[in-house]
Image (cartoon, rainbow, N blue to C red; front, side, top):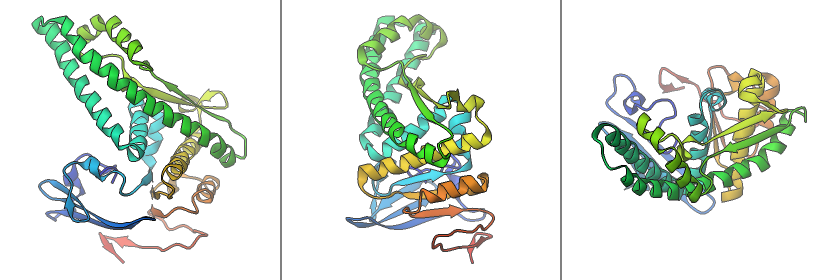
Length: 308
């Protein structure tokens, strides 16, 4: 689970086994300075407990266990729209900067309120000047979010260049370009003012930190357009390995690595390149076919929901 939510579905009832009334996750964890326990109970509603204390907000779970997830859908970070790339950044930053969650949520609430008022201006002739209330808040919060993202993009760039060269035997060079129209508060306020008429006509805010994106370039070509399937998979590996190293630099501990049916998506060469770079991590791999692992590994077979 990422932040107490499933990466497979937004409907938590789907996490309950067919024929059962509830689902329960019980995790004991050990860090260099402490031990702990996390329980997640899903029934009519979801309840999360850390060391038997019920959490009021899911965000309070952050910082207890650090996890990096590989799954086949990660290819959508490249192949689908900017929202997937923003989500990757949001998840990564939130693990290490819990305040980022607060700032981002506050921004999205103000954005929703501004969009509602834009429609009221269009259909109910509300006072246009009152938009300045939300403009000021969006610009203030947007600048904070930009600085968080810019900092982590720079961290990724420092890591990914070396990682990708190693994986591709120096056959490929990689670049990441971060695009934002909210680099400072004053500029964002100016952009909001200049786009006000368009926003009113469309009924939503067309520019801002919620439109940020980053592009990945391989050998001077944009990988989501011109990259082969193998190159795109390799880029995802490099991106996730960069995330692993950044978390380690920040907290001094290797995060848990979850590989959800990801290995089946890789050819032998890329699989070996991945495994060579993650030997020091605690790794949990799920797959439908057993494959050879050179490291010490424990194999668990699950059949019809039962551990054999």
